[in-house]
Length: 135
Image 1: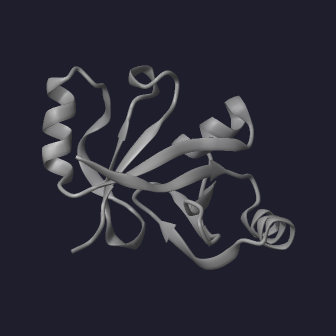
Image 2: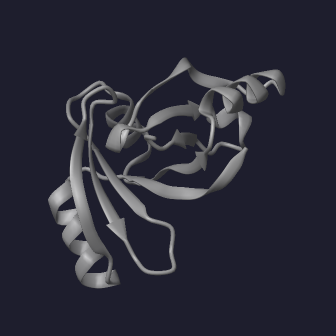
């Protein structure tokens, strides 16, 4: 079901200065920036050879899930994303195992991917995203 870690999502208050910091201090490369309106976020994609990619995520408006995360917890790791081959099969399997989902159906993610989140209560307080890349 799980293929690999796709990325680590990090919630940030200010995207441009955060990107600059990761690039200049740690040597990451900026691969692109995208607004994901269905999730109300703006995302910067960073890569570093030999490491899982990092997505820096900032809310597009107040009251959204990422905005609430930042208000409650501050900046930091928001989620770990795993790539799956068939997201609907993964959802069926996880529901059958009693895993709590955030939402009932996969939605649109960055790059045209289908994504769904698994509630942190099901994974020791860690928000998990499952991602099926666009075919």
